[in-house]
Length: 307
Image 1 (tube, rainbow, N blue to C red):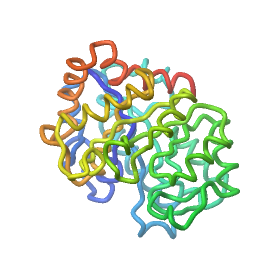
Image 2: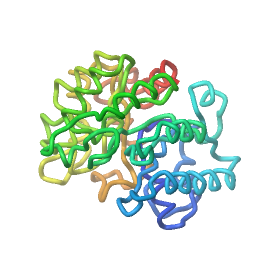
Image 3: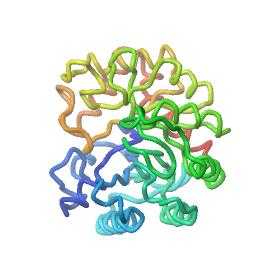
Image 4: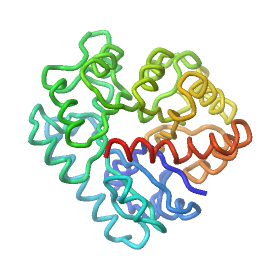
C-alpha cells in the first residue's frame, strides 16, 4: 500500500525541536513511513510568527535543515519536483516542498524565484493572518483578498510551476484566486464547512469551484475540522470524504492530513501509520477505484498537469 499526502508540518516540527527525520517523536518519521511502498509526502515549511520579521531567511534555514536530513537518509527519501521525479523514485519516500503562508516572499518576487530554485512546488498563500499576498482566515473580518502583489504572485506561480493553494485563505481571497488565476488550484488541507462549521473548512460552493477548475482538495485529519464537538473518529473522516465525493467528484479528493501540525488526531489514527486504515475504510465504503484515486491517483494527476 502507498499514499500521497498534500500537507504535513514535519519539516517545521523537526526544525523547531532539532530532531531527526528518521526517528522523530512526531506523527511522521522515516521509521513510521517504512510500512508503505514509495509514499509521497508534501512537506510544508510553516513559520511561527516569531520568524515573521525575517521570514525569507528563516524559510531558507528550514529548507537547509530539512535537506540535510534528507541527505543523511538518501537511501530512504529523495526530494522530488514533479510527477516524473516521483515515478523515478521507486523504493524511497518522495518528498515535495511547499510553503505554508507566503510571509517568506516579503513582497519581493525574487524571493519566489529563489524558493522555486530550492525546490518549492506548492504555496499555501496565507496561514491564518494577513501577509504581502493575501488575508488569512483568522483576519477575515478585516476584509481584503489578494493584494496587488498577490495578484501578480499567483500569476507568476502558475507560470513557474508552483501550485496555488487556498487552504487558510479568507473567503474573499478564495474568490480573488478564482478571478485572477487560469489553471487548476488546490486546497491542500481543508474539509467541508457544511459538516463542521470551523472557518478553515470550505463551503460547498468553494468545493464546486475547485472541482470545476480541475483542482483537488486534501482531507484534513484535524479533529476541529472534522467535528463541531472537537472529537472525531473514522466515521467523521468518511462523512467529509463522502460529501467531497458527492460535490467534487472522485477526481478531486486527496489526502491532506496535516500531521505534525495538528494538536490531536482522530480516534484510531495515532500517526502516519494510520493512513493505511483510512484508505482501507475508503475502499470498503467507496470501492477500490475511488480509494486508489484518493490515496494517490488524484495527486499524480494534478502534479502531472501542473508541474
